[in-house]
Structures are given as C-alpha cells and as structure tokens.
Length: 392
Image 1 (cartoon, rainbow, N blue to C red):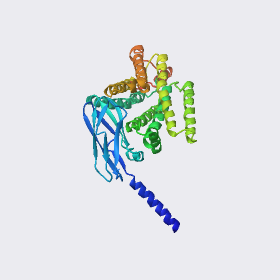
Image 2 (image 1 turned 90 degrees about the horizontal axis):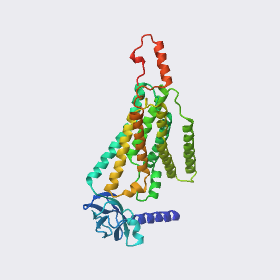
Image 3 (image 1 turned 135 degrees about the vertical axis):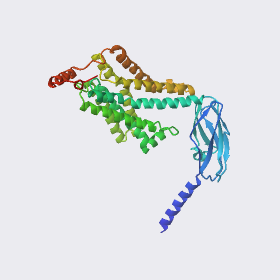
Image 4 (image 1 turned 60 degrees about the vertical axis):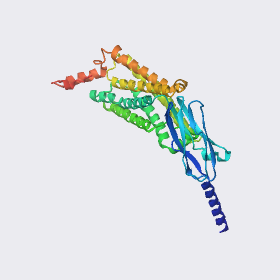
C-alpha cells in the first residue's frame, strides 16, 4: 500500500507539472502578404500559463516585413488573444520565430512561428495557381492518347518497350516516395525532425498524379501483351540499367531495415533513381523513331500534352521567382527547373521527328511483321474489305 501511495503521488506530481506548463501558439503558421499591405495573425494560449511571459518576435530577414508589436507580455492565467500586424516591405520568404525573456520559458513559445510569403502582385499568385492546375491536368491526360491509338490500331508497334519499362519503374518509385511522406506518420515525424518548421513537400495532388500515372502506364503495358507487337522486346541494355536501379533500391531498403540509414533516406534514394529515369527514359523512343525513320504507332498527343505541362511548370517557377523575388530557388538549386527544361527539349525533338523529319512516312510506315500479317489476312479472306486492313 505504501509503494502504491508513493506511485500515485509521483503520477499526480507529473500530471500537475504537465498542467502547469502552458504553451502559446498562433492561429496560422503560413501567411501571404502583399507589398505595402497588412495582414494580421493572433497569438493565443491553448494551455493556461502559470506565469507571465515576455514574448519577442524575430525574423530571419530585417528588410522584408515589419511586425507591430514585435514584443509583448502575455499574462499568466489569461485567455486573451494578442494580435500582431505584418506589413510587407520587400518580396521574399521570411520566417518569424519567438523567444522568451527567460531560457526556462522558451518551450512555452516554441510553437509561435510563421512562414511569411511577401508577394509583389496578387494577380501573379492566381496566375501561378491556374498554371499549376493546367499542367497537372495536361500531364495526367497525356497518358491516354497512346492508350487510344494502341486500342484503335490493335497494335503497339512503334511504342518503345524500354521507354515503357523505365516509365513504370520511375512512377512506382515516385509513388512510394509520395505515399510514404503523405500517409506514414513515422516518416512525417522524421521529416519534421530534420526540418522543424518546414512544410511537408508532398501534397495530395502529388499522390493522385503518381498513382494515376502508374495506373495508366499499367494499362499500356497490358496492351503490349494483348495487341500486335511485332518483334519488339525490352532490350538487354534496359534490363542492365534496371538491374543497377534494383540493386540501389534493394541495398538501401536493406540498410534502412537494418537501422543503418533512416527510412526517409531510403525514400530519397528512390527519388534519385526516379530523377535519373526521367533523364534517360526518352532516349530509347527517340532512337527507335530514328532507326525506323517513322513515328507511326507512337502518339504525338502524349508529347504535345507533356510539352504543355512542362512549359507551364517552368513558367510557374519563373513567375513565382519574380513575384517572391526568389531567383535563388531557380538558379541556386536548378534541379527541378533543369529537369523540366530537359523534358521540354526532348518534346521539341520528338515534334521535329513527327512533323518535320519523318512527316512523309508517319502515316504509311509499318513493320515487316505487320505487313506479313496483313498479307496473310488478305490471302485467307476471299472477300476482303476495308475492315481487314490495319489502318495507321
């Protein structure tokens, strides 16, 4: 009984201690403010304070915004709201944090932080949003022209299998990355530990796009098994490249499972493989078109939609860099912009192949196997009609 009483006292003491530790927070951690305009956020206590706290607001930039007031006293036991006015002075991204007058009270104000975006023009904000939805739609729809042309022709000749194989592997890894950071709490917590006041980089539209891309690519792969494909196969070079990627993924998964690296690092390695695939996946199709001197059987609609999406994506990045005076994100870390530009340049090359280099052969070019198949169909049918001839 004595031991039980002591334990109860200890638990009560811990609970009382937790109750005494109040905390302050804000009504929003993300605010956008235009130049020379004002926005307001509110500091409030979601647990009553046992003692008064002096709160001082700080920014990581001195010339982007002004806070009024930039310091205030929050009384103990109060439920009042403290309003703070933000005035935008110069475009850019600013982080606002809080400190206390005593180190012992710092934990009370740790959740008082904001990510403030100072923009030059409100119209550019909405234009960027519209561009984002258009390129999301363009990229999502871009898979279906190829599916339709395969269905119409009942053939996949002209569609490179290496491109298709690399695509499904890339989108699978991309889906793993997105789903992991969006759905798995442990990975989200690990990301927050590395980036304490950063935003999760994966949004719902990222998850939807990657899963839909996997779905559409799987439909195209199924078509490769049920429709005429001639002598087309996945090349040994593609198998070798995929083997290297498989080793990277399996080894990194093993290291993560053994606790050598974190699972978040494993997802990053998967994303690096996806980026590599994005760079190389167009090469097999371009070479195949060159060798055949034709783009027959391969949908230009996919490329036109991909070109639209890629162009708008880059325009969005340029608009945001101008509107938020954040050119460092564009040129300081050129990976995203560079990949978008690389894809658009390949799209332009594909359009040149289709409309310029091989424009006279794209409607009439067929493989030897298709010609043989058509000849056999004509020979075995005494009353040939247009329905017996495969059209391109």
